[in-house]
Image 1 (cartoon, one colour):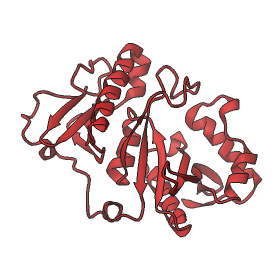
Image 2: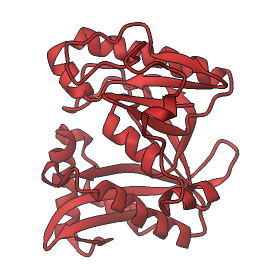
Image 3: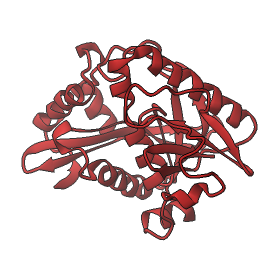
Length: 270
């Protein structure tokens, strides 16, 4: 697998097609070739992951400014073809993005993602070492693509300080994410569970958020898309419960810093 900038119009067209493969987008929402090229030629970045001549994934972003006027890279899209998922390709794309952005002299990359998507949460916090203290309610309005339709487009804004010691240690394997039951010691195993099992029929309950000393944990389902397919009311309950949990925690100064695994459960650590 080779990760590199795109070379010609055919590869840019392949990115257009891959957007639909990943998100099932209406044509009007696909970022078109001319915008991809313009961004890439003016300080932006578009990297493709190629398996021979086949585009298996991509990451796309451009320079931006924080509210305080600090230069950052805004990572707008990152996608992997369904046939290449669970092969660490998204992680490799983000590492390549990091190297290119560091070469531009920028030390912050930001993006947004759905906090109920467990795969993305684990990548962003557990593997990359990103953090977040910004919850955005329905930031994109009603979305029409296959993955996001049906729920408010709530997002966490991720801040990835790519030159920080924390990120260097996480990427270097010196600071592994806390993944064992011991990470939640003080709770009796099997009691007071905060997350459903993989069964789509399990209720989210009212336990999205619990205090643990001076930290908090927020549970998310392992497969929100399966829940949406089986029970949209339950999926909406997950959205509302986690919205309240994140907004309350961030208002009190908490920062989402990691992910915890416990049996069938996945939790944000704040």
